[in-house]
Length: 158
Image: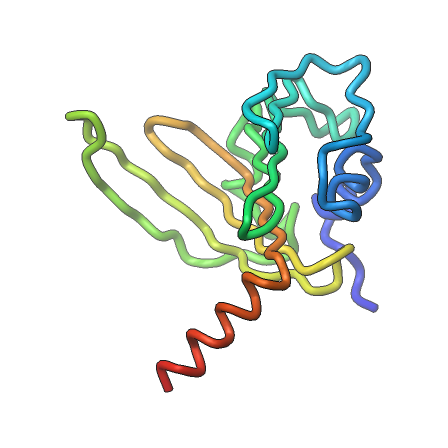
């Protein structure tokens, strides 16, 4: 089995995130000692979240949808976006987008690092830098149904 990239290895070691990823639900997770903001019945934000002494975040959003599980980290700096090779074991070309939102011009850059199949379960990693939201590390764990629907859609277009 391949060695996990640094960032994913830290996620795997975190009891809250590991429990969420393996159970697929927020119920039963003990957030005692954390400052949390419930966003809905299916999502929660945890403020001042630490993966380790070196890796801390302003917040992490943990949520469940029909598509799968979502974990979005809001880092305190740009280091993950600037050096994904160090933290995720790979880098990709930058994707640039500009659009208008509420009469404000938004610049959004992303690096879709893609899928990691050697993790707890399949995860898709994307790094963002937005003029509105700042930096974000997004982990998406697609549901089996989502993957099945995606496969059907690809097969029907051939």
